[in-house]
Length: 149
Ligand code: HEM
Image (tube, rainbow, N blue to C red; front, side):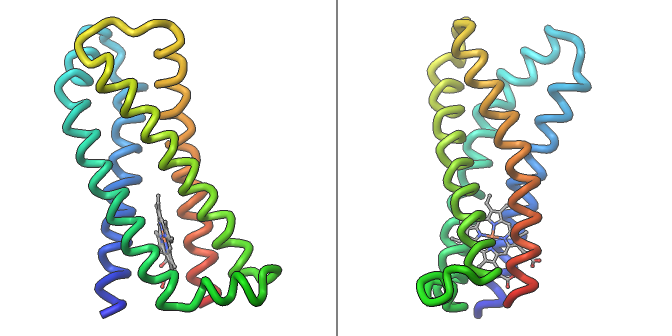
């Protein structure tokens, strides 16, 4: 059973991280402003729901494994261990990503058909860039956690 949970977790991670890589690549490679606007207008909402779905699954499956493997006990009884430290860092990073995703989506839906203010633009771009970078870090932590189990 836990194998299926891990399978769904890894599948969700590929969809979540893969989606952010694709959108990042589009932002860089699609130089035509008009095409970019059109792509983001149509793809944006679908991408938002798509990514939210996988992030929720990551939390559900991640927490299931967290308790199944007794990582909660390892964190309270051996907080200095490699496993506890990595899990601690991973949870903080996923927490930040979740918060940034909520902020990003709030701006995206609020300004879907209207012009953004410079501040909204800055926060929106900054959050997506941070989410992209932190995703790369999380996969690194995940491998480390796997090594300890
Ligand atoms: C953006 C969110 C997340 C991403 C991208 C992610 C990614 C991954 C990946 C790729 C693995 C497999 C590592 C491997 O087998 O080498 C993994 C394993 C794991 N994740 Fe996550 N994860 C995320 C969120 C979470 C959360 C929120 C939790 C717990 C609350 C969690 C708990 C775990 C645990 C316990 C494992 C180890 C299971 C095992 O390898 O047997 N993850 N994660």
